Amino acid sequence: MNAHTTDAHTPYRRATVIGGGVIGISWTGLFLAHGMDVVVTDPRPDVKDQVLAGLDEIAPSLAQLGLPTGDLTARLHFETDLATAVADADIVQENGPERLAVKQEIWKTVEQAAPARALLATSTSGIPATAIAQAMRQPERLVVGHPFNPPHLVPLVEIVPGERTSARTLRQAHDFYTALGKKPQILRKEIPGFVANRLQSALFRECVHLVTEGVVTEAELDEIVTDSIGLRWAAAGPFRTFHLGGGPGGLPHFIQHLGHAMEAAWPGLGSPTFDEPTVALLTGQAEQAFGDTPIGELAARRDRAQIALMRALAETTDPYAQA
Image (cartoon, rainbow, N blue to C red):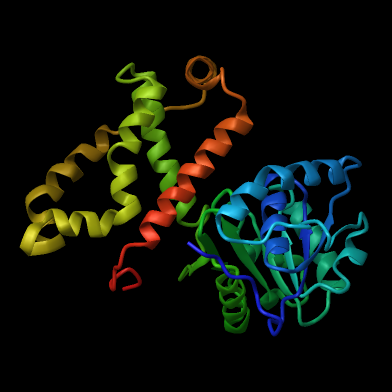
């Protein structure tokens, strides 16, 4: 699986990454590996050390994707003043705190200081672009560019318009993320949590229910998922999976014969809460199942497996993959 870097003719050569946390570091590494100049802006005094350490951790994954990682930080700069940081940006990727008032203030400043040509994207996990752009004079410029963590590795980027986001901005965002080797999806309407996080939340709610009810442990549930629907959905999503489950009759046949039984079970799904006993149970089981291995090593194992899976899937030929 060979990744490609953005060519010299792309309009996006200079990126500003707002926020030097986990998501910001991941975006920064990806942009740098694609030959872009990157400015990271974050008011924390230790942000430079944190970003450099994070880039060292993800560099092996970038290399496995076929991206150049030699002198990765040669085009990396840091700037604490937000207006100065975005003054020459072609793309501004914001990953600030998930607080509406903070994001509104950030984007008010960015809009005033960034070039008119700049693509403006927020990595918010659930706050609508419509709400964030309320303080902007040109809300049509802002779009949600929500990655699935970690952004340098997982292909999906959800592009979510606000009520006034322009079609031009959507096209720009789609072209930009595609040039980075991502697989962007433009959502047809704005919805809290977008799509991937809503699906993840729905499944995790039932995971928590099954564990708290004593049906399985966390470790056992993880194995069940990775040995069944995790593998299946990596090759074919839920709808195609059930379309295949219907045999020659496809999805209509599946719904006719199995759908009503599935629907009847929906009210029996769990509705757990993160109360004190639940948190204590989940924390204890996580410590028992994963606590002996450092987080960094667990993440490295995950990334190696993810890359191997992506590489295997890339080698398959599926003319209907984009249908």
